[in-house]
Length: 360
Image (cartoon, rainbow, N blue to C red; front, side, top):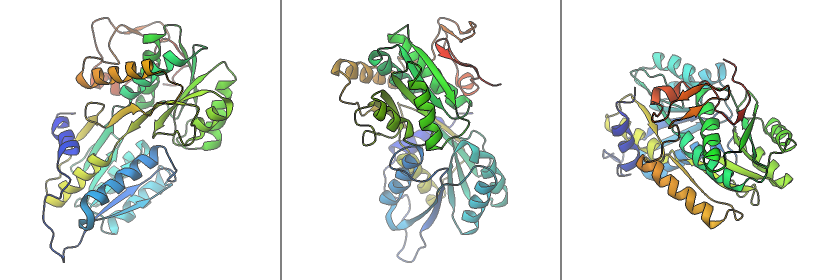
């Protein structure tokens, strides 16, 4: 599934940012479209993809014209918006939300000359590529920081949907915490939505009332961070650095970077070299990083996390290396073994130390 990973990541992260082809003064700029699942806020999931779009414009200048549509619900609305962008002459369309995968594939069949990029999807077609990041690597590292910082040994996690990507993050976070604090427990609240600031805040407050003193989340707004700031708790920022929202609460941020990938894919269309594929890049490729430490985090903890980040990049540290037991007592990764990509991508359980169940 990932046989083109190395070449695609190399293209995304290491190519020069000058266009592959020369455009005459009369050439029409390539039109690139972006569809966002939530409004563009000051930080969060959509903000990171908007930064990626701006990176394309900065790198390619007048040879490209980008368009975005924000706050598009998954499902029928997404299909309509994607189809409209294709009809309007966009030659590459980025759809960064898991629920956009099927609408993207459906529209792609109608427009074989348009290239589509299903971000966080996993299905491909001749004119549909898929790309995602190994967010779980950053989650593990954030868990190390949380394990060092907690005083109650109880962390909270506000989660969107129980899909493998989210389960990977929860499990990696718990494993990171327990690697330095074996007493640590993680309490999860499922929202079954990606973006609803009021519900995200309510979930965070519920967890803080259950002895949680550090919280993480996999939703789209900054509401959990704001709640932690209000309650005097600690929090792990996700998607973006959120210290502007929670200057006292943030201990670390797990961020993802899309600019290099988006720029390379647009350039590939310009040069006629675009190919479908499936990219899954992480810390090593620069698509995921941790940092942006809060002022409360001791230098020793910062140094420990950054050293482990280097170990993840080199392959020395594998977040899902055994022995790993799930929270029902079953051995899921024996000692001396490491989960394969296929096993990580189909994850459907919670590890020991996580309170809760997965609806299967």
